[in-house]
Image 1 (spheres, one colour):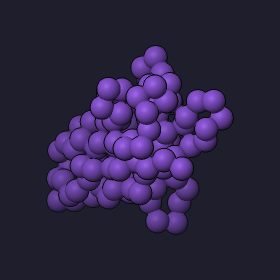
Image 2 (cartoon, helix red, strand yellow; image 1 turned 90 degrees about the vertical axis):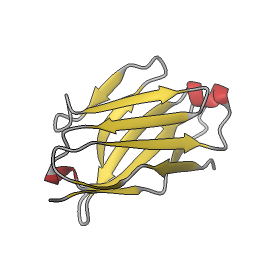
Image 3 (cartoon, helix red, strand yellow; image 1 turned 45 degrees about the vertical axis):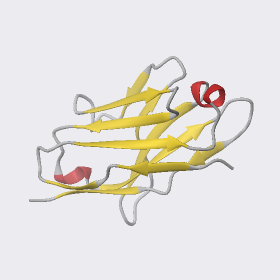
Length: 120
């Protein structure tokens, strides 16, 4: 089981920006570069929802609710995935989790979650 360490959460006013980072500290560069990386978010009492995904080839997909505002990116050499969040809204408040879907049936690792709060 690998370890993903998230950072960058916090409190921000509506319209503000945050950048989340997720480092795969125990993953090799090879495995990381071949992994599909995702960001999810969850609010109390609701399911964890997919926010953004980036493939091995850096193709990206986004939830409709964040398209045009959020950007997922990866740095394979640093074994890190990012989520740049701009134009934050109240409804973006949630705990954000990163996941690493590893190749060769090695499974999926999850981060511990980081709180993002949008409040005036």
